Amino acid sequence: MRGAVEEVAELALRRAADFHPGVRTRLRENLSMLAVGSRVLRPRPAAPPPDPDRVPVLLVPGFLSGDFAMRPMADALRAAGHWTAGAHIAPNAGCTIELADAVEERLIRIARRRGRQVALVGWSRGGTLAALVTRRRPDLVASLVTLASPNMDPLAINRTLAHQVRLLTRLHSWGVHGVLGQDCLSGECAARVHAALTSDFPAGVPYLAVFSTSDGVVDWRACLDPAAEQVEVDATHMAMGADPGVIELVVDKLDQVAERDAGAA
Image (cartoon, rainbow, N blue to C red; front, side, top):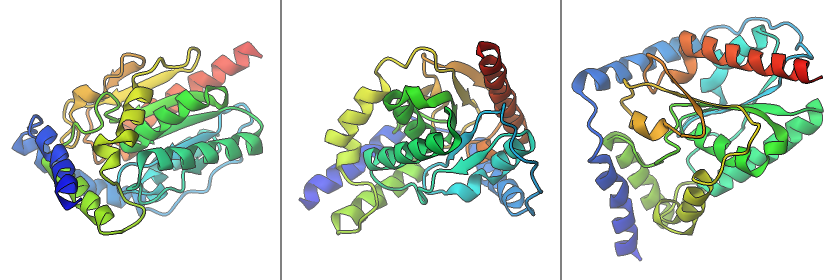
């Protein structure tokens, strides 16, 4: 059993060998985390009441992260009149299918509570989970936005992240629950995720994939889902969900969804 686990744990490292971000890119990634921290820790501004014409938004954080990382995005969306909610999946380190189940259940509850479709905004692995859920429940999704999400190849990651994945699979083999196991990398779970991500995307659901060629964590080419409208930004991976320019882009995109819905009404 241990030999099989070690073999699977090495998979992410072998895949990461094809992705070589430069020294400047890696340094920029590390420094950007300081800026994100300062934005996340700022006092939260008072938000106006939600505008009933604005689509509610479910924010899905990235790998080893939680709803706190999406606070700058949530604050900007609320200031624009959107009702927002977190995914409640921290630290986003478990089985992909199980986490997608949790996000789907959260989506169902929010759609029922708000009485309308919901926009999904996912950062990195959060965008992968959001894409899986959108394919499951397109009837509940008003729009999908992914931020630096390697949906074309979830293991197109740098070596640092690959080592973290390797550690999680080892912890899973030692009996630790709630973390990635070997099945999520090369077993039935991985096969189900791949089949879902390469299946036809639901017609009629706007899909925006935001990527950066300066991404030092995931290979930006893996973010280019052909089913999506692809938009390049100048941002690091670690700051993508808190970058002011990216936030403005997302707010504008969701405003277009509101205008579309108003026109349809």
